[in-house]
Amino acid sequence: MTMRVDAKVVMLGKESVGKTSLVERYVHHRFLVGPYQNTIGAAFVAKPIQVGDKVVTLGIWDTAGSERYEAMSRIYYRGARAAIVCYDLTDTSSFQRAKFWVKEVQNCEEHCKIYLCGTKVDLIESDRGLRQVDYHDVQDFADEIGAQHFETSSKTGNNVDELFQKVAEDFNSISFQFMTEETGQNTCQGGYRNEADKKIALQPHF
Ligand SMILES: Nc1nc2c(ncn2[C@@H]2O[C@H](COP(=O)(O)OP(=O)(O)OP(=O)(O)O)[C@@H](O)[C@H]2O)c(=O)[nH]1
Image (cartoon, rainbow, N blue to C red; front, side, top):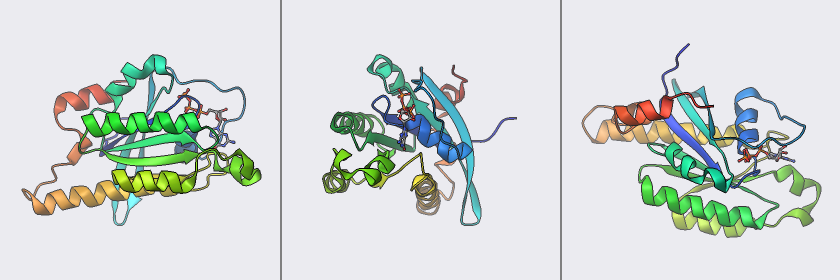
């Protein structure tokens, strides 16, 4: 079965920050336990989401965080309308890496909205001493770059639906804005700049 994708969303961030777990929680409502398996290349999943009286289908690309796949991850944010840039609240270096991805996206995709996502908040809730990334520091950075900021747990589901809902709502209101302000047509339709981008983005991978 094929599904029409409205908005391309890309998950970015250092390896093991929990990108795949976020997608698993959001799409399949589950948290996989067991040995950590790193993503190779990227994985794609589409999910329809209700926004008011409309349905927006998000096409989510879950990229590999390993620096080995950095060049490949760049391919996946091409034409993206939203980038969920993840960092692990218990790992300072992952926030540095998140800043790297923010710069990349800002430089290459001017129409891509950025969402900063601090993961594994359940760990902090059970032991505050584990927090290595300060909420207010990230909020200041988010304000500076005009991004939304969430702290989530894929283990408990805390704030995960809210994050993706916000992505879909923002996409919907931006495309509505284009529709009313520009030509009277929805210029964001498909979430891609042109057919070539669409073909690249929808090719099955791995
Ligand atoms: N406690 C807790 N552990 C988490 C959470 N999210 C992910 N993890 C764990 O963190 C590890 C890495 O999670 P992944 O979702 O595979 O991370 P990833 O960012 O997709 O990793 P790459 O594929 O290497 O880029 C796994 O052992 C997960 O179980 C969370 O919200 N809470």
